[in-house]
Image 1 (cartoon, rainbow, N blue to C red):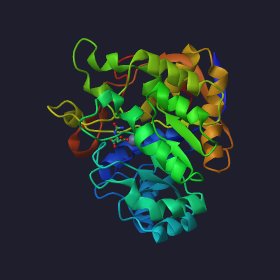
Image 2: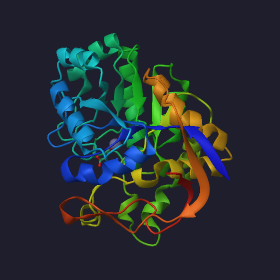
Image 3: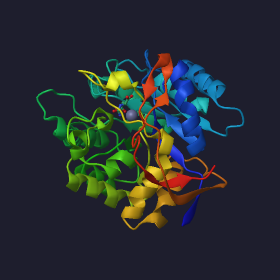
Image 4: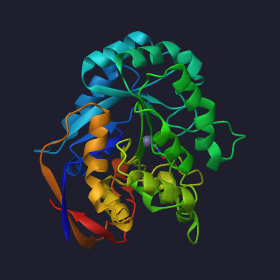
Length: 344
Ligand code: NCD
Ligand code: ZN
């Protein structure tokens, strides 16, 4: 069996920088025509000037002949001025501004401590139509880790949308039925990305026979009923849900550690993993809209031209890949078969 899709895009991707960038970029460039590049470098990408330089480094790191367009994001801080939002909108290559609640995830210490401090920037984003890409988790340590996304909806997101009803928002890497329902019933200014790993795995994967650091990511996978709700949302045909891998490489030694980093490396086999999830749901015919149309339409960009072909043919990702500083990167599904294969 084989299926053909319009070339897909990845609307949430961590590429890192330097040698790490050079190690992972070929995988995404092979899979996707475009990707929205997350700004959580050290230091974070907070200005259009820094985003332009990062974009140049990505383009310079592309393999010969690759056809891949990085779409850039700015990292929102308490001090982002409205003028930077205007510059971003005028740049043509900054496509979203990313909200990391301070302390929520990898390299988020420069993130927003209180959205009220960002109101000038948010008002400008609403005015110019610049999407806010949201890591939707409350960071209050008193809140149970598995409840942080749900709590974020009530405490932050709903009030934000009431204050700024024209603001375009992408609720990133949703992990709960509540988030899926919230997005489905919000206005058409609100959309969401869903990762392949949250469609395929529930929280049991983190503890299958022992602790499994390569399944640890943020927001952390939830119970099975939530996974099923995410599959229903992704395969519902609603244009509000689209592909965002949140592929987030960390060296093996940084994950297999007494305080392991959050992030699953899925870029190596991303579209194949999504095909598995859609096939299991009996919804392969909905994969193209989710992977190739809905995100482009939300971001008001043209859909890609040209097809990719996926074959139903099992292959096994390697146990590890070379990474920066002599390290190794363990791809999701390392050493276990993936049932679809993207044709070269
Ligand atoms: C991401 C990373 O490593 O940059 N980690 C993750 O678990 N998803 C950050 C993020 O998107 O939360
Ligand atoms: Zn991410």
